[in-house]
Image (cartoon, rainbow, N blue to C red; front, side, top):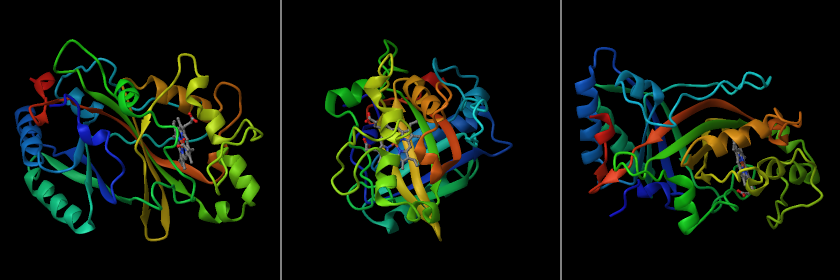
Length: 295
Ligand code: HEM
C-alpha cells in the first residue's frame, strides 16, 4: 500500500471540485484533529487529495520541515493574491452529481470544525488542454520520476510520502487572448497550438522558456495537475504543482515574474492569479491519512 496520496498521481478526472475551508472560530485543537481523522476515514473510498495549510499547522503547533505560508513576491509589481486557508480538498469524479453529494457530505461532517469558504468547479477540457486550447502537462515527469519529484523522502513515517502543494487560481482574459494573432499566441506559450511542437524561435518571454525545468540549477521539476475552471463568464486554469519541497515552484515563479532578468512571462498578457496558497499533503498509512505528525 502506498505511503502517499495516490490521487496526486492519477490522470486529470472528467470533473472536480476544489474546496478551501477555514477553521470555525471556537473549534479547539482536539476538535480539529478529530475532524481531520473522521474526514480521512469517511473519504477513504473517494477519489480525493487533502492538504493542510500553514495557518492550520500553526494553530496546532505543528512544524512540518519545509512548510510555510505562500511567500511574499511583492518585489514584482504583479500581485500574487496570497490567500491562506486551513484545509484544502480536491474531490474528483466521473460525474458532477457525485461531487455535489460528496461536497454536501463533507460540509455536514465538518460542520463543527471547518467551513467551506471558497469552492471552484473544474473539469477536463479536450483531453488535457487549458481553456486557451494549449495542451497542458506535456513535460510533466512520469512514473518513478513523478514520485521522486512530488513526494518527500524521509526516515520518519509521519513525513515520508508527504507532498508540498502550490495552488494558484489563474483567471484568463479571453478578450485579450482572442485579440492575439495565432503566431503571437504560440510565441506566448512557446509551443504551437496545432501540433504542440516546441518553438525554438519563441521569445525569451515564452512560458515554456521561462519554466523549462532542466534550465534551472538545480533542475526544477514539479508535478503539475492543473484543471480548467469556469464560473459564469469567467474562467482560467486552477494551477496545482506538487513537489518534495516548494523550491522548484518558487524558482519557476521567480523567473515567470522576471525577478532575475526583468523578463516577465508572456502569459501575464492574458492571465493572472486571483488566489495563491500553499498546503502540505500528509502521507498515507493503511489507506488513511497518516496524521501522526499532528499528535
Ligand atoms: C495561466 C496559467 C498557466 C497556463 C495556462 C500554463 C500553461 C502551460 C502550457 C500550455 C505548457 C506547455 C505544455 C506542458 O509542458 O505542460 C506549460 C508548461 C509548463 N508550465 Fe505552465 N501554465 C500556467 C502557469 C504555470 C505556473 C504558475 C507555473 C509554475 C510556477 C508553470 C510551470 C510550468 C512548467 C514547469 C512547464 C513545463 C516547462 C518545461 O519543462 O518544458 N505554469 N504551461
